[in-house]
Amino acid sequence: MRWKRCGLIFSPQQYGMEYAKSPQVIVFEDFVRVYFSACKRDGLKLISYVCYVDFTKDFQKALGVAKQILPEGRLGCFDEHGIFPFSPMRNGDEIWAYTSGWSRRTSVSIETGIGLAVSRDGKGETFERLGEGPVLTSSLEEPFLVVDGYVRRFQDQFHMWYIFGQDWKVYEQGQEPDRIYKIGHAVSQDGIEWSRDHVCIIPDKLAEESQALPCVLFYQEKYHMFFCYRNSYDFRKNSRNAYRLGYAWSEDMTHWNRNDEYIDFMIPSRDWDSEMQCYPHVFEMDQKLYMLYNGNSFGKNGFGLAVMEKN
Image (cartoon, rainbow, N blue to C red):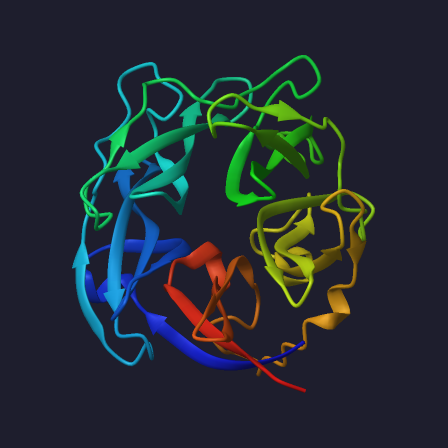
């Protein structure tokens, strides 16, 4: 897969915001709506909240920005300290969005869960939580860090790809524990009650690898997954351990073949995405494949676009 990088297309600083993380789209007849998570300060911590920006379908012009389209989570709820990512999909006349809620803890930094918000206005401008709790959270086999839910409907079933925590580990004395997480899979008849496989479906490439934000589409008779992965230690400031893009394909959504080298992504040094590439969202529009993704510093500078070139 040879991708043509189109550069940074959205900078949150132009709109008085910090960060624009995990861009994900709903395509309309004459424009594209990109949902993302911005951040605001809560003392020394950040709280993520959901926004969107509309683009012309050639991504040459931003048509307008809507800030914080979903209220903050209630005190004590799984999403009290933010939502990131926000993953929308069409379901009949409604738009369903699977939300990743964050809440702070003491012994480790955070706990997470996956919720559901629904838009019934026909435009995806306003959303309401289905409830104040998650539809998928920790379990006996997956005891923490269930997050990054990406849902699509294939073969008359809802399929969710998400991540779940395997370990919290202190790599350096005096430092906070770092988390290790993998990609999992679940199925549902109604998109609310889920049955999980409880296995890591993507083989590791690194010794202590963390995998994040899977995105799956069916294209040319195969299922294609795009995700990001990193070392689980010293990844925030060391570019050698930072997020990079991963890829796998499958014929049955059960057995996945990992081929990261299929993503041909030549990046010049000192560019906005030269140290990190993360949170990919790949979608088909007008018979072309597009990728939105974040770069250095986890999307602090915004998100960019790439288009797959046909070989």
